[in-house]
Amino acid sequence: MDIKKEFEQTLVLIKPDALKNSLTGYVLSLLSEFHTGLRFAGAKIVYVGRMLAEEHYAEHQGKIFFPSLLEYIMGKLHYPDEPWKRRVIALVYQGTDAVKKIRDICGPTNPLVARDKNPGCIRALGTLVALKDSDGNIIGERMDNLIHASATNEDAEREIKLWFTPTDIPPFMRAYPVETNHLHYFFKDGNLYLKHEPESICLLSPGDIAWKTDIDALRAIERGPQSASSLGSVAAKYLINREKEVG
Ligand code: GTP
Ligand code: MG
Image 1 (cartoon, rainbow, N blue to C red):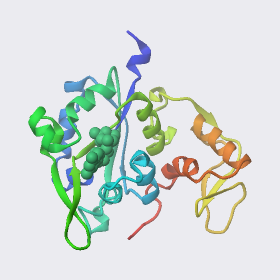
Image 2: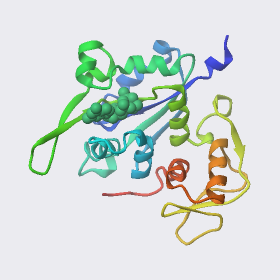
Image 3: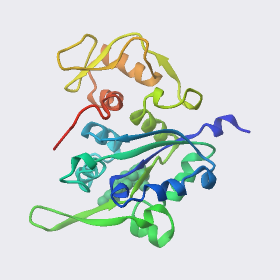
Image 4: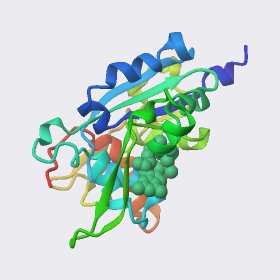
């Protein structure tokens, strides 16, 4: 058995449209160990704030559909008047060929293509929604495709570290190096502090276990000019489900 392959991981998000349509059980069945040979390594219900949404979809920044993509993953489009229902289910699956196996069951990004090319895949149950400007002209489309799955092993590592802290994952199942932190790190208004600031949030305390790459990033931010984007990618998971973010 190739131990390294056995530890391959991928991030799955069950998106707000899947929750609204009560498809969670169906999706979990298709992804179950019986069908895929993969195991759960992590699971959480997440109220998605703007920082997390922007970090997750950073590669799409600047595209015409980016604003609606953020609103979609934040649950605002499917629950405009019921913020308490806005959430996604974030899952880490582990096992041989985890990335490819799950992408195959999800199917093509566009639900119409999914129906055409791969009937029976999860995204074949999705929908396309017209995007209009303030005058009502159609300027594009939104793809409500029910599920996210990491596209490559590199994406999986970035995304799992974005959504999960090491202690969200059982110690024998962690696929990426961790380190014990020795400093206090506080976060407020997009900035990092080593000492407590009024109304700041403590990201890490001495003795906490963190992803090694996060500790490296925090040290670099602390030394050099602050890089808002890299700080966001470290901080977002520590802010998950902390506060109500409305609007
Ligand atoms: P994810 O698993 O959600 O990341 O989908 P993907 O990897 O199949 O596609 P990609 O990462 O390229 O896009 C992320 C999300 O942006 C998709 O799930 C779609 O909701 C949306 N998206 C991607 N490309 C387009 C596009 O050309 N038009 C529109 N309207 N939405 C898109
Ligand atoms: Mg993608």
